[in-house]
Amino acid sequence: MERDVTGAAARRSKLPNEAKQKEAAKIRREKTIGVGWSILMLCVTYALIAAEYTVFLIKAGQAWQSVVGSLVLIAMGFGAFGVYAYIRREKNLATFSRMLLICVLLVIACAPLPVTMRVDVGFTVHVLAAMLVAVLTNRRLAMLSSVPVAAAAGVTAFVVSGVRGAPMGMILAAAVTAIAAVLALGISSTRSNTVIAAGLAGAAGALTYGAAMLACGEAFEAYWRTLLWILGGSVLCGILAVGFMPVFETLFDIPTDARLNELLNNNNPLLKRLMTEASGTYHHSLTVAALAEAAAEQVGANALLCRVAATYHDVGKLKDPLCFKENQRTENNVHNDLDPYESARRIIAHQQDSVELLEKHKFPGAVVRIAGEHHGDSVMVYFYDRAKKAAPEGTEVDVSKFRYPSGKPSTKESAIIMLADCCEAAVRSMKEPTMRDIAAKVREIINHKWDKRGSMLWDSPLSFAEINKIETSFLRTFAALYHERVEYPDLEEIDVR
Image (cartoon, rainbow, N blue to C red):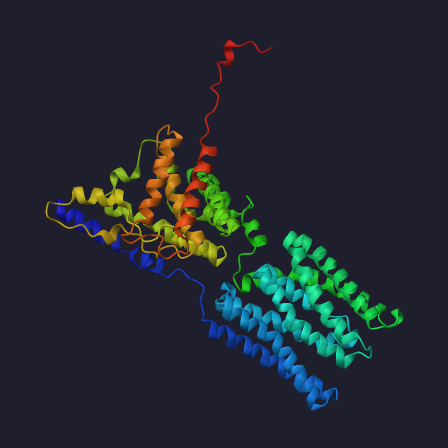
C-alpha cells in the first residue's frame, strides 16, 4: 500500500508541471556567433555604407581615383573593428544581438553625413551613435567606432566644403568628439547627464576643429559657424540619445545601468508584491543581493546586475509563498501534510514561475537567465532523503523527480548568485552562529558546489582564484550583517527623565 501511494504521488508530480519543468531548461540565452560571422556582419555594413558613398561621390562629380581612395579610407576604419574582433574576441562582438546593434549604430553614424553636412560641414549626428554604443555595449567599442566615422566625415567634408582644411579638421573633430563623449559618459552615465556629456564633447570637437583650421591658416570668418554647428549638433545628439536609449534597450534586450536602477525602485509592482505577500523571501533576497553585489565587485562581474537579479531571483515564490520556510510564521508547515514528491514539485516550480513572471513584466533577459539558473541542476537533498526513507526496502527512488531542470550557471553573475543564495540560506538556518561557524559553513557550501562530481560551477567562467575572492567577500559581508550588538539594560529600571 505504501508503495502504491508513493507511485501515485510520483504520477501526480508529473501531471501539469512536467512540461513546465522541461521548459525551464530552455531559458533563453544570448545567441553567440563566431568571429568569422562578426567580421561578415561588419563587411555587409561596410558594403551598405560604401554603396551610399559611391553614389554620393559620383553625383558630386568626383573622379574614379577619388571614389576608390575614399572607399579604401572608410574600409580601413571598418577594418579596425575586424582586427579588434579577431584579436580580442570581444564578448559584444561574439553575440548576435550586440553585433547587430553595433552595425545598426555604425550605419546611423555614417549614413546621414552626406545629407547633414550639406547644411554645414560641422553638422553631424555621429555622437548619438558613439554614446549609444558606450552605454549599450562598452566604452572600448564606442571609441573604436569613431575611426570609420571620422574617415567618412573627412571624405564628406572634402566634397561638400570649400574650406581647404575642412577634411583634416573634420577627421580630427569627429574622432575627438566621439571619444570625449564616451569619456564624459564614463564619469556618469545617467540619463540626465547624457546631454551634459554631449555638450562637453561638442566643446572638445569645436576646439579641435578650430585648432585644425588655425593650423591650416584659415581665417576665423570662414569657419566660425561650423564651430557652433559642432557644438549644437552634439547637444542635439545628447537629447536624441536620451530618447532613443530605452528603445534600443528594449529592442536588443540590454541591461543598461539606467534600466537596472529603475528595477530597484520600491514602486516596482513585483517588488511591492514580494514585500507584502512574501516578506521572508523579500528579506532573504535583499541579503543575497548584498552578498552578490560585494562579491561581483571583487571578481570584475556586473555588480548592479547581480544586485537586481538577486533581488528578483525568487519572485516565483509569490505563487505559493507558504511552501517556503522563510514565509511561514507558525509551526504549521504545509510540507508536513505532503508526500516528498509533491513537496519537491512545488518547491522546484518556483524557478520556472520566476522566469515566467519576469518575462511577463518585460525584465532584461540577463535577469531572467539568472533567475532560471541560480539553482543549476542541483538535487533537493532534504525531500530526496525523505522519499528514500519512505520507500519500501529495495525500491529505487528516481532522483530526477528531485532535481532542478535548469542548466548550470553560465555566467559569473549566475554563479555568484547561486553561491550567495545557498550560503545565505545555510547561515540563516544556524542558531546563534559565531563567525567561525559561518566561515566553516560558507567554505562547506562553496566546496560542495565546486565538487568534481558534476560541479555546479564548471559552465561558468569563474576561476579558482575568483572563487576564493568570492568566499572572502561573503565572510566580510556576513561579518557586517551578523555583528554583535551591545545588550540594552531594562529601561524601566533606569530613570532617564
